[in-house]
Amino acid sequence: MAIRYTGVDTISVRKVEGTKSPRKTHGHVRWWICALLFLALSLNYIDRQVLGILKPTLQARYGWSEVDYGNIVFWFQAAYGIFYVVFGRLAEKYGARLSYALAAGVWTVSHIAHALASTALTFILVRIPMAIGEAGAFPSQLHAVAEWFPQKERAFAIGIINSGSNIGAVVAMFIVPAVTLAFNWQMAFIVTGLLTLVWLVCWLVYYRYPDRHPRLSAEEATYIQADYVAIPKPAPYRALLRIRETWGYICARFCIDGIWYTFLSWLPDFFGKAYHLNLRSFGMPLVAVYVCADFGSIMGGWTSSRLLKKGFTANKARKLTMLGCALLVVPVAFAIDVSNLWLAVLLIGLATAGHQGFSANMFSYPSDLFPRGAASTVVGLGGLAGAVGGMAMAQYSGWMLQELGTYRPIFIVGALAYLVALVFVQLFTPAYRPVSKALVQNSFQ
Image (cartoon, rainbow, N blue to C red; front, side, top):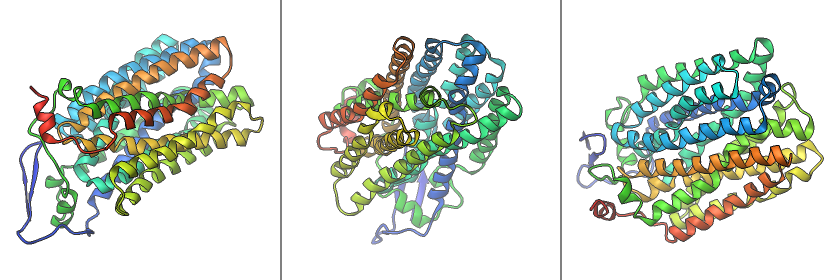
């Protein structure tokens, strides 16, 4: 077998005549790439979670209202959504290595700069460039997965990587209070930011395209490229917006992303208001919630990948798994009504597990259905839609808490969002078949 590099958007694999792609491969380079991506997302969510953990402390110290905090989250989501689309295109044009390096560098510098802020306005100003960098994480990692994994392994790989968000949230629960109590809240931003700089060096040293990686065996390369499809140039936005499958992804991401952002931004505050926990005591409940989310992420990806290996169609494997995950979220509507802290933790933990399992399969959607040159752009469009959903939830949550003082309406919306998202997926992609290369190219006209 020979591998020939023909540019960022085309990698061709020529197999020796008469050979077959192996069922199993002895190479494991792709799983080391998976580990590196997992670590990146863990650090991303450590950084993102710092402000949510410190919300009660900063709100008490600087006198922010609920609407002020909602505005900080709103502008983060606005910048995040816009640059999610930008990084989707950058990943298509320059590849995952450069786009992820740029993203991590921008978000890390901005994250450390939070130590200089105090008012709601100054937090908004440092939060915007942080959002710009963090927006590059998911498009870059999904592009890397499309480069390094065949379809039957993508959901499982994404599930593992996506679980890094929960690990990051758990680790943040220990690091942020410890550093804040030992030093001050500013050091929490500085210490967590420096960790990402170490990862960035490792990323630049180790990550390469499959055909350029010195440790990749010919056998593993053939396995990775078994179902590879390419188009000659990135698809224009107008072309993708004419395709119904694009709208299935956009609508689903709009429904679910805002719920996850709400969990990240408001859960420490919820436990503080509902159960009188503080910086010293809400750590374990939040750790439990994100451990549940971690389990859901891995199991959601594993379940659909397992069903595919058992002969289920991608349509049934993905959608049955997403249905099960959506049903796990429904009981969160009752979290506000329970008096026992750990019962509330269980209900919220089930919801976060359901979200992450659902997301692991949704993140497989673009690489399942769209050829390379289009998939990362679709990811970017979905990320924009998700950020708009997050902006709406930030304003809705801030207003509800300011005016009504209750999380009930917020949890009710969260309980129903995933079933609505699955309805959109079914409406726009009833057969869940790959979009043909010809269809995308014809839409260029």
